[in-house]
Image 1 (cartoon, rainbow, N blue to C red):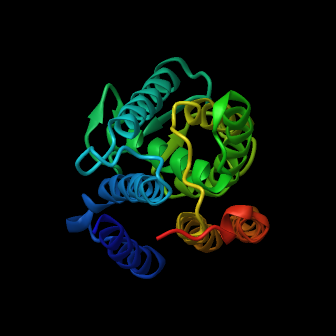
Image 2 (image 1 turned 90 degrees about the horizontal axis):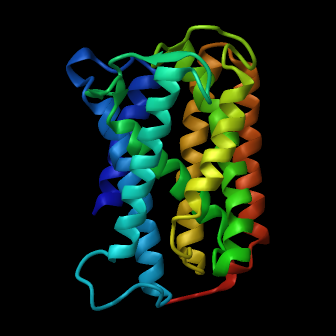
Image 3 (image 1 turned 180 degrees about the vertical axis):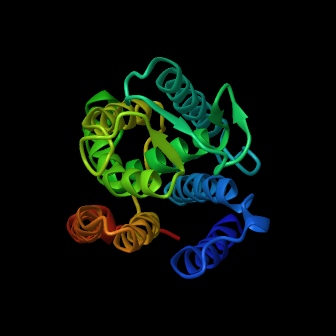
Amino acid sequence: MIQVLYWVWYVIGATLMLTIGVPDILSFSNGLFLVFYALCVLDLIYQGRKRTGLSDQSVIWKEPGLWAASAILWLGGMGVEWVGVHTKWPFGEYGYSDFFGIHLFSVPVTLGFAWIAVVGNSALLSGGGSGWPGKLVRAVKTGFWAIVLDLVLDPVAHARGFWQWEAPGGFYGVPWTNYISWFIMGAFLSLFLPAMPADGHSLLRAKWVYQLFILLFGLLALKEDITGSFIIALVGALLAEGSWLSDSRRKIKTV
């Protein structure tokens, strides 16, 4: 059900953002989109783990380990954002507008869900995670997918005033330290996630979620004349497709 809700929200939001813009009366939907994105990704992980026997079938609805990891990702994301806003490190000097809703210590509470969504979606694409060697490999891959997404997302967010950099520079007004930090934080936070499901169904849906999210912001980048981010969005979508085609999990079928 949450996946259906996410896609309905996505289609309506994408249509509005790419045409007339989101009306002020619907401004609350911006933050909710991040929440639904996070819940969609968590549901993909849980359902995939259930199909492949990785989750505890005796637990009603969701497994505690996944929710504990989600809480850590939310707290970790909010924590690093708080440090970033108040100390200018590690992302650079920036501040948030009211675009994503209620703030907690100058950070929108929905940003924690954004970290869950990005890290979880990237980890789903990366797979692995069985034992520390597998988790470390998955962490590097997760950081890669996260930074590709951020190279599209952050320039658009900056151009549209979602958040504002006080010392513009780097890539379309966003400091390079921000992108490096996204890689490091994405890789680090992914270590707290359980093993990703090893089935083609989960991988296919995770790929679609990633591709359509990055392509949406790629089109928004094109509207803002941010050609570099638009090109990266296309390349990122193609890389996700190539990763899916070459992934052995694509051939694993479950009931």
